[in-house]
Image 1 (cartoon, rainbow, N blue to C red):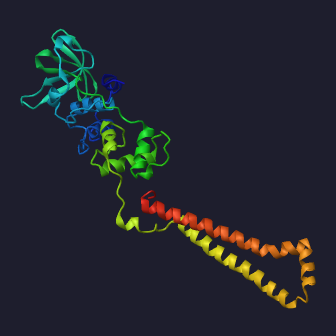
Image 2 (image 1 turned 60 degrees about the vertical axis):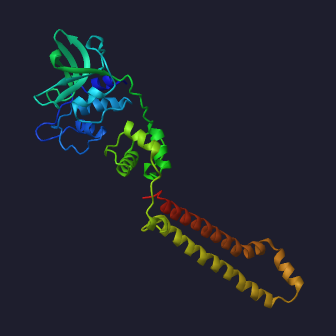
Length: 310
């Protein structure tokens, strides 16, 4: 979608009633780096334009000053203005004041503008040509493609934000949590969205650091670790019991054996062979339990030390 098409999708958005704030407008402030804004009563025409640009993959001025767009892109004569160009108007008596929006068309001495914070809403209104300060077009503003959800998830996981979960292309609670954690670590606005700023940061960010005490420690209150330790203990006791149960009868039989022939005859019977082997089979099973329990335990500790688990 183009910035203008994105802007059109917001038509009808209004500030929150009374002391309430519209989350959609608050997200606009945040998407251009101003998540410090507490209420949607703060002038948001520039935030609206910037949000639409960033969402379309174009870097905005990321400022809340409408006149900042007089230095954005390239200048265009009003006679050559096209739908979607950015128009900046004077407002008030101070030199820094202004209004910015998207050009729709001219209508006699007026210009129709699609913008935000126009009577506290996103709509199309007319502004006098005499107030026009400039028309700007992207021109030299190179498009910055934003990453897909799947690409963001893969990059976050590679950087150590394993809370992102599976790389499935779906923005769920875990993906939003990972995005917020990454944004917090890298000084970005705390909004769980994929925009130009996030894309740029992901391409240059260093891997997430792991605290020294975690890098050499073991997880606390881990059910996996507790279960693995219990299985190791059970396996040791079981294996020891099985071997002991086999050794004692073997010694007794050896003492009572009268000659080699009698011992061979005793071993010929299939039932006797199986019965004699069962303790050793049991010991092997318990040893297997110990092996896999230790493997699970070590894997859990390694994940903890690498920061792959909470």
